[in-house]
Image (cartoon, rainbow, N blue to C red; front, side, top):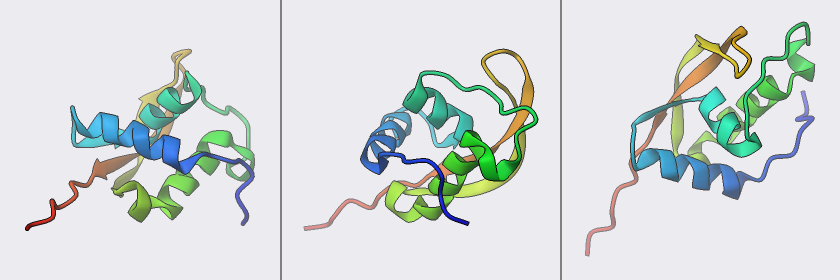
Length: 100
């Protein structure tokens, strides 16, 4: 399946780097909130048409570049309106500093 949304990966990576300063784990919903200014569930929308699902697929597809690793799927979360949904949980990988 092709991606239906466009996401600026450099911006997403910057968001993840900012999270890395404070924590080791993030949810797809955390990244979407920072990227879009909010997180809202796609009630009744098939996954192949869901912005949130497509965003998660992009995170997974580019996880090496983003320096994250999915450690759990279908983690229960609430959206910004209090609706229950799910998201993936990601470990933020620490890059190794270059030794001189």
